[in-house]
Length: 210
Length: 210
DNA sequence: GTATAGTTACTGCAACTTGCAGTATGCGGG
DNA sequence: CCCGCATACTGCAAGTTGCAGTAACTATAC
Image (cartoon, rainbow over all chains, first blue to last red; front, side, top):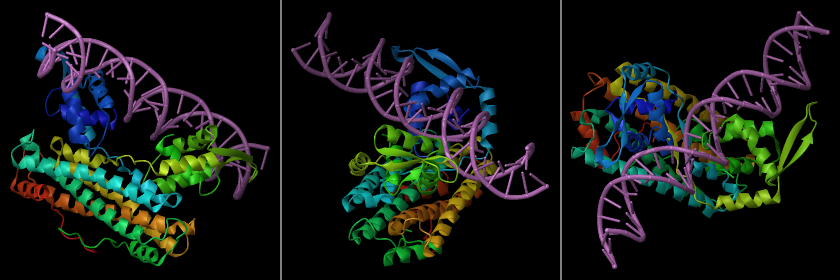
């Protein structure tokens, strides 16, 4: 049982799903907390069934056959045990930051390009979540009694995205002041920032909507 | 060539390293942008050598033998080509958020426990970076001419960590108001938050050090 | 009616990545 | 000289990803 198995099991606890529905739903709803590939999500319910945590029923809806998975009592019990365990440390992969760390091996355009990439990736997700919240107001939540959870979760996403977007603007401003990418070292501006960070203070101005 | 290969290649572009040094250095410096296991980092320089992007020299320093890797001209050229390519979308794995999404399957203590886990994981990293910045002020940067990059990178980490810590406090406050975890749905507080998010506004108060 | 292009619903496989156990060497203390 | 510990790796099984491939239904055209 990996964390991904438990994530799928938790979805199964909401209602029975076909493998396809389960996969789509997992990609949509877990994308920002526990991003997993379609391929993996397809194989998880099979393993759950093997372990006795779910049962499979072959249905014939829509002319085509599909396997519908339902959680078992053992599954619910395993889920309850997992809920109380220590969570894994969070993990952030941001290739744009990797490019920033090695910005001296390229031009200013290269780093700024990486920041543009990051901005557009974050922007897409940001916009999607704002729209999702709009749909919740219109009663569009698939499990209305769980709205409080989705919304609290969404507050995390929005705060994070806003912070990253504000930081991108800030970083662009800093980089614009560089004559080139390499060999700058401890400039006046860098020293000022280092002092702020060593004192654990924010380097961004106050947010515009706080 | 994976992104991890390029990350190691970029490190090799700074100076020649032994596999051990390279691995340690990569774990320390890339942890927050591109976290990779020790095991993988050990094998990357071997592959780089196979592909002709690095050369190996068997040295005998400290009595024990070690393989020292040096970047080649082909390696530098490959690195320059990579620097200009599109970056991958960022990826965030936060198991504590997964627990929040399924909080209705456990108790309030369970969710709050997950938030505590997240707080302590983030707190460790946060503190480590603040201390690192203190050491930079004392001239402790391993590549002084690259300080401007490390510090700009660190501003990202600190802003992110501060945001997450502020969000944890906020989320605790919300959860404290819940009578239980399940079946709350669109409460008054949730509706207020949903409206704010749909209007793309922050739900956290202004930061305390902005 | 049937060719064909598109969508739905998957499966197989190679390559990438991780965690952990295991190995071998050097080094300090008793 | 032996023991425990740190250093410097390697092997391997299991987890994960991307992509190519398959097969069935669906819509539109001719």
